[in-house]
Image (cartoon, rainbow, N blue to C red; front, side, top):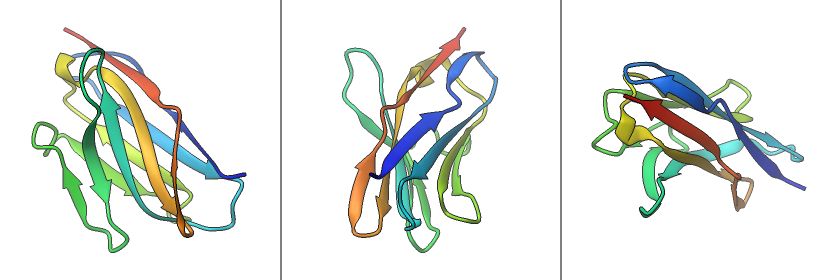
Length: 115
């Protein structure tokens, strides 16, 4: 059974950094493409960053220049490097990835940025 498990969230002060990881297990297939979403209480889920199969990255305007998305060489882990964090970045972050011919999502990891 394919699973995506996120980790790396936590409490950080404004201006700090966190690196989120999303590990794929239960499959021999690699992560073809992936995305990170976030949802704050009372707000809609929004796409934060996406990485295409060709390596092209796209970002939400409010995080562009501060966040980076990547995979490990084995393409089994999707990362989200978050720098210069702001209180507005506080949310639960979820990864979504295409593995083989299917799309999978994780349970999320909480990021809280204090001012």
